[in-house]
Image (cartoon, rainbow, N blue to C red; front, top):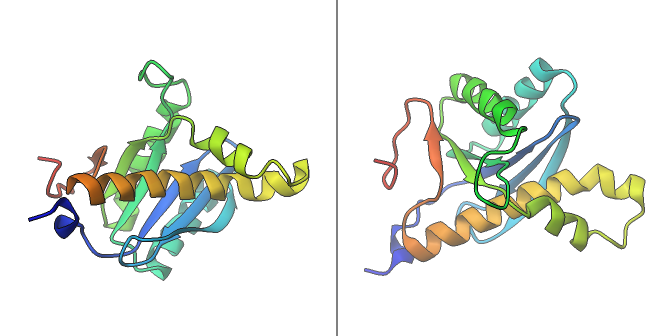
Length: 162
């Protein structure tokens, strides 16, 4: 059996949670294509959580894949504490797994890909592009190895996490 045959079918949302904005991306049910969905203002945390929960329901997502900011040495960055708190809150509301995955270099890659856009236009979509990058790496890992990367927050244990 190839690792690809263990791939879990279903839409996932990629989440790049920042201080000012939350980038959201989605994938098709076969996990072949990750695409940008929305940039959610994050200044009002309750409103941002509510919007991400609504998007998870709208897309009938099987999982949220949330980027965890790590330094190049693999240790959590200062922002990781805030992301962990948001992941815990999301896990309580969405009733689906919230998976934390390494997001190193996804924002830098998104900025590189969008370098042709002006500063203001880039800010509007860079978080969505970073979320798509997080999702792309996660999907590729699961497709290649047969198990999803990262760890699940909350009471949800899926194959590969135990």
